[in-house]
Length: 283
Ligand SMILES: C[C@](O)(CO)[C@H](O)COP(=O)(O)OP(=O)(O)OC[C@H]1O[C@@H](n2ccc(N)nc2=O)[C@H](O)[C@@H]1O
Ligand SMILES: Nc1ncnc2c1ncn2[C@@H]1O[C@H](COP(=O)(O)OP(=O)(O)OP(=O)(O)O)[C@@H](O)[C@H]1O
Image 1 (cartoon, rainbow, N blue to C red):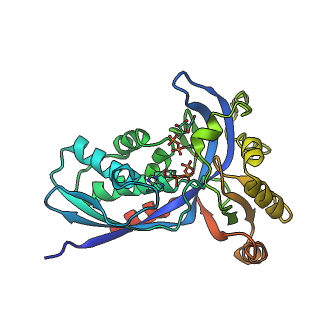
Image 2 (image 1 turned 30 degrees about the vertical axis):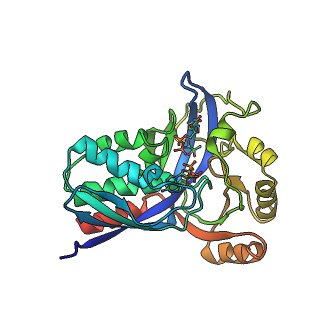
């Protein structure tokens, strides 16, 4: 008998602002950032196996099977929970890699939440977010599924409720290495912490932008083009660039003009991840 399949969303995120406060002894940077989700992302399908084998059936260019964050997340959860079950996994991948919209981190979080459900582990969110952090700084926010003001390396999360506009997201055809941007000597690393909550208006800067724009002409070009219509921002360390619009019609109009020469998409901002909305509907 074939096992039933469960398909779950794996949404993208945007960093609505990103300040770098300093560098820790382990080389990681202390940040303040606001994460919001997009109603746009990959879809991951799971089917439980009873032989303990973990197998991702979809191949990724340049990412070996055992290095894929989906497989690493599944293996860690299996090891730490002592679960004897395995899993077959397929992914419909639409999120660009190295785009700053968190595709790999989101895939890891969807895997953790999906397997917790299918393997009936009963882990709570704190424990899943803790395991997630060991896979990447952006994984915990995807595990928790609420738009958040993040501190530390991105793991200290306070829920926030920014406006939920329609975004035009441009995807310059370059993959930006997060590690490379964080090691650039010219990176601003001394922005004073914001101590007031909620974060006051006028703090929407991304400290990575000058370094990324200098290194990647394609990102600079996307910022300039979108900047003709709205405030154009960089998410994470890029490469993606985004701007908000009050309606889908306006976002579609600008997107149609820009995607004649650039790749991009339109998506709604969301303060609750579509993964969590789907999981809630299963209970
Ligand atoms: C820049 C952001 O995208 C903002 O959301 C994230 O903080 C990056 O999160 P991520 O892709 O999950 O990052 P990780 O896979 O943990 O780290 C990639 C590399 O970026 C650097 N890194 C990352 C996060 C951070 N707070 N400080 C860093 O210095 C480190 O060199 C690390 O080796
Ligand atoms: N399932 C996965 N999806 C995407 N990338 C993965 C995955 N597993 C491993 N990777 C590796 O992780 C790298 C970063 O991918 P990711 O899509 O998370 O980048 P990103 O959007 O810039 O993320 P972030 O905003 O978290 O920095 C990829 O270049 C790839 O080598």
